[in-house]
Image 1: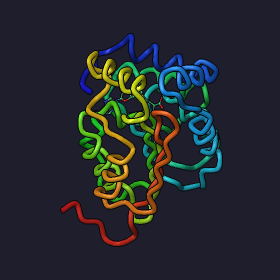
Image 2: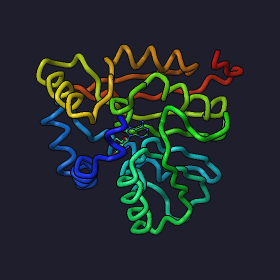
Image 3: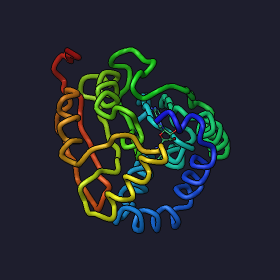
Image 4: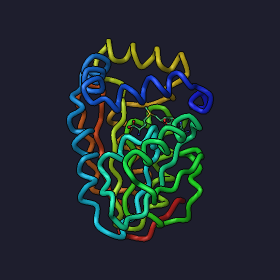
Length: 221
Ligand SMILES: C[S@@+](CC[C@H](N)C(=O)[O-])C[C@H]1O[C@@H](n2cnc3c(N)ncnc32)[C@H](O)[C@@H]1O
């Protein structure tokens, strides 16, 4: 949502919470009834990035994924977010981790400033539920992936329980969540974006997803 462009406090509170893994895990359990172990493990897995890999991290937030990046790898990493506060935090975070090769971009996930097929891997952790048009954002991520490129991420989804749905409604009212959807909606959006090998696994109100851009020629129709 556009509110992220202005919201300083929300950005800082969220980012400090998620960077401190214990707090992040407690928040995941309390707010979403979810175990965020997979989130932190996925990020740690970035250590195995192969040389030459082109990665897009959207939204990068405060740069939580940087902790997984090899310091001396020869990957290309683009970190994109709408919020200047988050981008400032992610720059500082990259400097702390000794990562100098990251490109930072302020833009909307629904209009990615990249050519088609330029990335091998797209990461999208805890962003879709914040975007005004998550299906359009996924279509953009699919567009900028090369055929056979991979997408993986997580999103808060509706439909896991009354308490979680109430928290989602509250976050929508204060403007930090967008329209969002259910885990089934997420599967449909991924398929509509031209992705295959789709996996969506829900834990509480958090859906972890992965997909591949179909190797067949992509049509944005
Ligand atoms: C909950 S944070 C997640 C950040 C990070 N991926 C993580 O796992 O901590 C959501 C992020 O989405 C960003 N955001 C919200 N709307 C956006 C949009 N339309 N385009 C790009 N980023 C957006 C916010 O600025 C915020 O940094």
